[in-house]
Image (cartoon, rainbow, N blue to C red; front, side, top):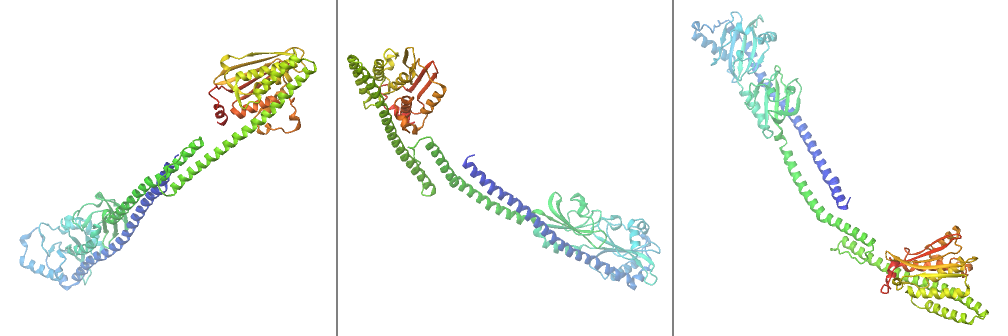
Length: 614
């Protein structure tokens, strides 16, 4: 996962996502708070509205109470009634007198729209106010209505019938009707049934006041009976319809205050209701949620706009500033990886004057410092390698001279003057090559050096060994370290043929493959045991401390493996650990030494240094 992806993921995980959750949680919290707050306010409103509605009905109850208790009404009960089905017997003058007296009894109350009274003694009707397009129900038909039994059971207390509840009795108008038993004051006997309809002007005035205070919330008020019939709609839109057509019926039961959020007529609303003191009617308030949440929506839109702008600014900051930081850090990491791969010449270009600029400059300074230190280390290593080479050569040169002089001494004692002369010439050839300042010479000269050495040794160990060389002419110009083959051949003579009865044989040959030169020195000597091979191997591993003598025994030139170890260490120092010696030997069957060096011609003098350094 890249740093840039981590920064973007962290930004969205710890900033954007929490803000979204916070916004959603805050919205639902505020919505719930507004709903509860409005429910509390609506409860207070419905309580006040219920008092006013009850006052309108109670006032009419008091009016009819005083009317029923008056002497005039009691005298009116004794007046003959009229059969509305036989109007031919109607005395207009007497009827006008009766109506006039009834109006006076009701004090010409402005809310009274219509009134009539049934007399119980003859079942006739005393009409008070006329009502167009309405046929008054006969007393016998009234007694068949369920409402009649309710009126009887109330024993003089008023019973209210809402509009549209019983249109046969009250007509199809939108008036509330009061029905009550009229008693004789003296005997308390039921003498008639009084039916009074009131205008809605009083209710309209009450609801108009409350509707005016609720206009900003788009609130409607209803009076609904227990079966869900809408008796009164403050907006006069759905009078006489069933409430269940517009909302659930669970808010219309019981007498306690109920408020919940639901759909009304397809619109999200808060429906609240409270029972009235009259009949099984309930006051219902319906407020549009859109009007209630308009302030919330405005607040949400403003906050959303502010948050969106903030997020956009944050994204701009993330894209331009944080992304710049991430890109710079990624560049620093890439440069560091290139430095790890050895590219010390690269430099990082960082613009600006902030901490990123300091970071880039610090990296460049660090690379320069590393490059300088590596240069010093390389220089010191080269000096160390030269010192080690000189040390090894000082170990080899006395060894050669000592053995050769020992052989010349033996010949001189034997008065072999000619052989001494030849050996001196061979020795001069060996010393000429050994003392040459060049570290690398053509293979041709190395072969001449080895041949001179073998000729000297053959004088010393007469007829004890012979040798052969198989070197292709194309390989004679390859460059090798001087004194590479001579120590290996010397090891064969000094240790391989020691104690042998048969004639020893040394074979020297050269091969090339895959850019490498392979030199083989084989003998048919006594070979080496496994323990000797292991010991010799431990002497040729890469261990700088093995290059210096550690005790007096290692100064002995006859010590087995000294020459081999010197050759192996020189090759390792000059060409690297990928080159060196491989020794294969079996006790009693001879030894084979393979020397591996890079194949270089006359123009590749400096290439060897590159092998050792890298």
